Length: 236
Ligand SMILES: [Zn+2]
Image (cartoon, rainbow, N blue to C red; front, side, top):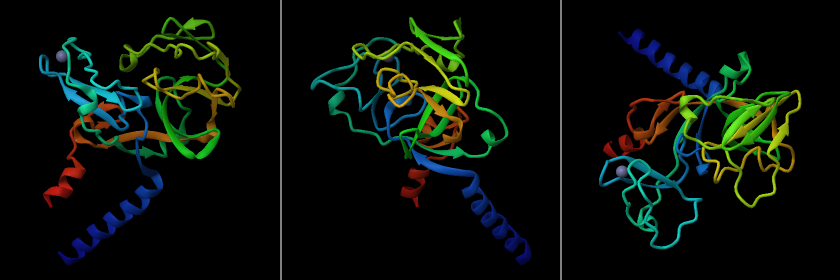
């Protein structure tokens, strides 16, 4: 029995050590991937239909503004009176993308090209060598419409009005074009003056589990139920 316990402890230690090499924890600090990954935000449950509504804190809020429920249109509570909820915490998988190339529509974590110490999370839209065009909220690759998968079907990829950025980008042989799921506030390939593409060596991995908070927890983008790690701390 003693030996078994030793083995278990050894295994757990090995998992922790190896796990630290293969994955790393990050906190989401911006609302650019809302609602897929949440940065600091305000949230309310609609009084009429019960749907959860979230609003990234980057969205300017006029005092007294009461947003409409995104599902049923009912007027919600006064936004600036709601508490700010901390961003999601997630683990990034360092290994998957060592064995294959990133794919279109995949969410990846990468080092920002102009400041390598900053890790950002966005969705891959354009692959190396492609010409990306954003028109009428849709993505065109080399002149052809790229149908959106269900995860992003409702997103309109428009430029922010008033910004004099291009609507068409040609990627180099080793670059990926990335966009946030909240194009209204996302700082992404559309606006980068140092070049729209993320070189492949700056892509560090795939967010694979969101472990806080438990109500938005997911496994490679699919919702799952995991214990709320923060809540456990309070229980203990
Ligand atoms: Zn509603």
